[in-house]
Every structure is written in structure tokens, then in C-alpha cells.
Image (cartoon, rainbow, N blue to C red; front, side):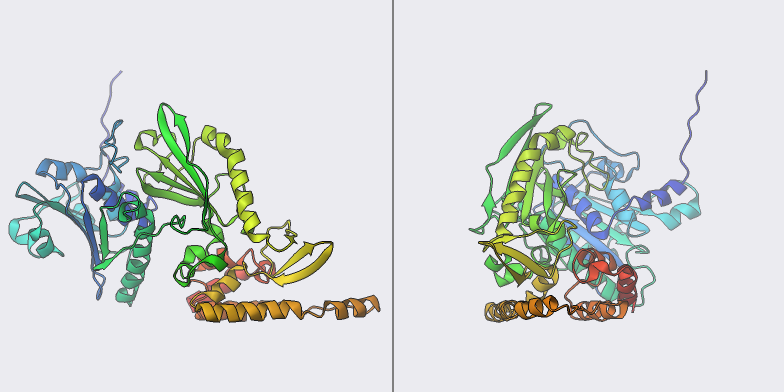
Length: 484
């Protein structure tokens, strides 16, 4: 028997760009490295005019020349044992995350006064025909983005992405594309790293995106008095401890105007229910019940915090992007009954003033049918996503006025008159919504900012609510309107 060594071709670099990182996930992956390097400040900057670069600068421990080269090596540096604050996984994040957005990756690091600057450039590699990096001279460093801020640091690391073919592409308005990405990024980082940013948790980290500080976004509204919370549960797996605690958020009528402006507390609330899984205090995955139950409008108030240590990565099937997990089956089985009990609390938040009869098809109705003392009535469903979205941005006084109007509409429904007419063998005819009706309504919501200008998110918001749920061409209508 003999053996051979097969050296990978340079095409592997291009292939690894398609791991599936979003811009938000890619930046978060690099900030994981900053946290592991004990940084307490991270500055993310994007070229606001021409969209030529994105830079990520931290004041962490920095790297020696050998460590910097290891960081750019594609062999990976996965380890069986990690420090408790190590948010890494396979040792591939810096390379795959960076090159998923652009074709040039520059790494500059400073440790004990020694500066190392090295660079992957996919076009340079293709031209050279081998796995070759550039090593920049001191005079080259002065011309890289954020060089002045990097020079001021005693230690730290600067990562620069350039030739942003995937992030910016051939857009005629790179400034608008960059601005949109950075605005959404600030909210994403505020959620993913909220425990690091919030001194009510562990605090101590500051993240700035184009000089604007990211604010912690607590998905559980922990400081809100009406939030219901269960005791913390502890579960042992392979000698390691997993924490779990459930939260039932207050009804929207108990939230402040500022809270109601949050997407995850208004039109996107239904899709944000479920488990919120943390690894080393960093939020990894959220918005799924992992098969324990199904998402529904009546369960949308329930969110379950789960914290597991990095020593259990293999059991939770953490992916390379550190954005998805699959909890161990024994964990889900153990807590299934408890989770179902917590979701019933969420349902009770909505079933005040009589018993709401649920629709079995899980479509969110515009009207609630309510039984109370053997009597029935209808109310406009204030939890309908579009009703909630219409409330967004209103003052308390304006919101009360709209709520009063909806209550009056419900009270003045001519139900008795309709009953008499139908009993007299007259047929009640409700005008059906055709595709053009749906198109006009979707256009109003998009143009008014009531639903996001993102076809997938908009479709997810509308597909399970009346009157859009019955329109078979809804996706095509949304895509056409957004493209226009």
C-alpha cells in the first residue's frame, strides 16, 4: 500500500466564499474574535460614499506574526478544549466570513509594539496560481483604511474587506447599499451581543458602527414589570450545565412607544417567538421551536432563553457561521411539557375579556370571535400584524384614538340586521379580494413603510394573515412591487 498527498487547488478559495454568510453574520463572527481577544471596544466602519471597504478594528490583545499567519491559514484551528470566553469554533471564521463579502482581506495586528500586516487577495492568488499571501511593508500600512486609528492602539487588530463584489456588487448607488447594510447591522449586533453591551448582564463591551454606538436589544424585556418569567432551570449534559428560562412578554397595549417601534415587538413579533439560544453569552439562533410546538399568533409572546457552554458545541450541532444550532434531543424531550405550559401563558395574554375561538388553520384573522357567558361578539383583532404595524410611530394619545375607533367599528357592526336579512332568505355577498385588490393594499403597506422592503420578510409577514393568505400569487405581487 502506498499513499499520496493531494494538495487542494486554489479554486477552494472561491468555493469557501459560498458557505452562506450574511453580512450581519460575517461581522458578528469577527467580533467573536475580538471578544475572545479581550477587547472592550470594536469599531465597524464602511465607506459611506463609494462602498469600497469595510473595516473592523478592536483594542484586544493583538497577535504575533506567527499567530497572524495562523489566523489566515485555511487549515483551521479548531480545538477540543477552549477557554470559557472563546467564541471561536472551527478556526475558519476570519477567512470564510471576510471573503464571503469581498475578494480582498487585509489583517493588521499589533502586539508588544510589533506590527504585522498580511493580505489574502483572490485576484492575486489566481494570477500567481498558488496559495500566496501578500506581506505589506510599513509604508504600505499608511494607505490602508483606518490606519490612523490602528496606529493609536497599544495593541489590537484591524481587519479590512475590499473589492466587495458580494456585498456591494455592481450597484449604481453603493452609498445607499452600504448605509442600509450598516443600519441593519447596528440592530443585529445590539441583539446578538446584548449581554455583552448591557451592564445588567455582563457589560463591558462597546460596539460602534460608523461612529454610532450599538445599543443592547434585550429580546425578553427583562426590565419590564409585566414580563412574566419562569425560574431558571438547569440541565446537565456530559457533566456540563445548560441554563433555560422562559419569558412571556406583555401584551402590546402595555408596551411603550419606543418598544413598539422595535420590529421584533410589532409586525415581526410572530416570527420571533421560540428559543433564543446563547453560547458563551452570545446569541446564536432564535425564532424557532425546534419541533416542540408550532409557531402561532397566540404563542408569539413566549421566548425561551437557553445558554450552553462552548464545550458542548458538538452536541448542539453549531454550524460554521455560528448562526444555527440544533438542540440535543434529550434536552428538547426533557423540557417539552414545560415549554408547552409556557406557551399557554402567552395564549392567556390574548384571551382576556371572554374566550377567543381559535382558527384551526393558524391564519391570523382580522376579526376575533369571542364567546362570553353564552353570548358572542366580534372584535377587530388588535394583534393582527398589520394593525400592530399601523400603531407603530403613533403617540399614546393617537394610539388610544385609533383603538377607540376600532372598538366603535366592532360595536356598530350591524349583526342583528344581517341576521334578519339572511333569515328572510336573502344571501349575504361579501366582495372577494382579487389580485389587483391585494396589489393595491400591499403597495400601500410597502410605500408607507408598514412592512419592510424585503420580499422574503414581507411574504412571511403577509402569507398567514387575512386578507392576503388566500391570494395564490402573493409572492409574485410582492416581488414585483419591491423590484419597481
